[in-house]
Length: 455
Ligand code: ARG
Image (cartoon, rainbow, N blue to C red):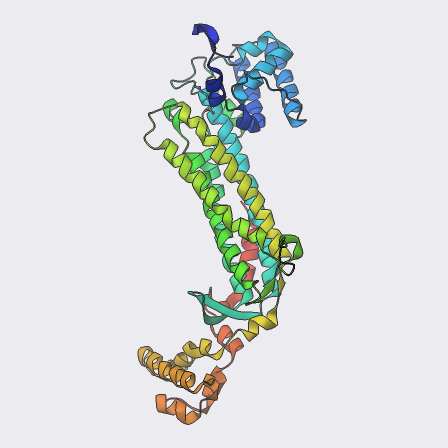
């Protein structure tokens, strides 16, 4: 134990279990050891410990890291947290110098340092997993540029669009997600070490040196803020929650596009499961779990925000509750992203079914636009075409089955060339404005370009 001196008896056994965090925070061992390696050097530079002691500490820390990496680290019941465990083991390996390592340092600035290093690595990992999914979407979109299917609003067929345009809509959501992780990383990249318990380090530790050694961009300007601040975790969790929400919305679409009633796409066997009862079933469990796990990632963000709300200044043990939500969100998203990527990579597109789902009423807007091009005010054109839609519906026929006289009765601006409007491809191509479905080729090039220019 690190702090037994002023106590008459050890902690209650149940409380000790309540208090201990080693069973989850051991995962930060690499960050913890990196932090201690840098700190030992800083102590040596400040002549608090000798070069020889610093070298002994470094040698021991590398052995401890190796034990963790090999899964060979043996924890004891007194290992309160990762910081305690590393120091205890270090002492067993190198003796006395280990007991000098914590000079001027507190677990308060230590845990903040470790967690920041962990979050920085997690952001980098998410950025790369997101860009993998983005490149799969680009790859798939490149093959579906001319595949038309119904674009939906309110889950009702609205206007024809290219399936590539649909796929790329998720590319841009993910692009923002990736930017958010890059941004979260910037604010995580601030060195708290040197803040001590709360008031600052008294041993003229070179914090600029520590920041350089550990790869932090900046140094915290206020030691109280340094040990209090968990904003960087909240930002990571928000970025994770929103990313997971985007995956959930994609999953939801793909679940119903792949339902036999739609049949637009088929999910690969590798990402579906069977039913224990009904032999015919092929269920989209991978996507359902991508959707379902969103709840816990959102809850992880909420959990941290609630922990922080109204917390008194500087360090309080409540802050130990920051790590499980962080780890759970990171694990969940890191698992979901490659699975959704796999689903996209193995998706089979049924272009015929997609096209067969287009119906002429989806060109009603194009009919109104035809009139607008002939000088009819849009509101009036909308009304006239509404009448035609109703007429076709009453007769139980397609819009294109109406006679020219029917069209002229609705508006005298209609001519024989009106029948050219009933062309889904032309409707899509007409929407060639920047960002429109008709400009999807240009959009794909932009998407590929922004994937190449990763920060
Ligand atoms: N396990 C603790 C945490 O995660 C480390 C910091 C402990 N600091 C303290 N003053 N008890 O927050």
